[in-house]
Amino acid sequence: MITKNGTTIFAGRDAKQNEELVNMFKGKSNIILHTSKPGSPFCVIETKPKKGDKKEAAILCAKKSQDWRDNKSDVVIHIFTGKDIFKRKEMKLGTFGVKQKKNIKVKKEDIERFGQE
Image (cartoon, rainbow, N blue to C red; front, side, top):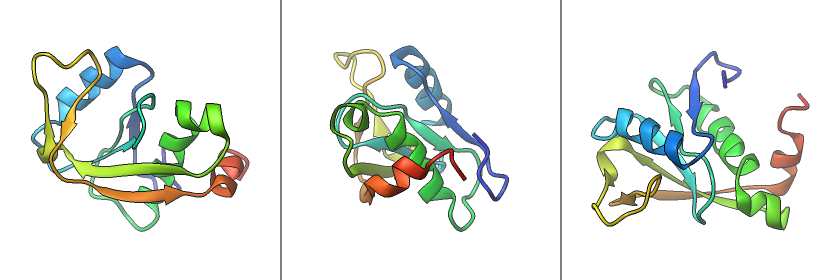
């Protein structure tokens, strides 16, 4: 996805793509987003985000999540960097641990409007 500011957001479509995507950015300072609940794409902001990029990426992550699909309500998103990610060998494909994160809540209304603007 390309944000209104022209920033590229990458998003995985499944566990395999999430694994590949996160491995590309693990250890780097790129901003990465994922829902607080399982079942969403990992979304990566390619460059230093401009104003509004994190919100657009969070809405994309929420819109494509199982949480949104199943509940149609606000979705909590975790925001962290590639430096905060770790993987243990017992973790299944597409699953990662996060050392530090921030939470933001994406409002139902913003998710519903996504793609209509």
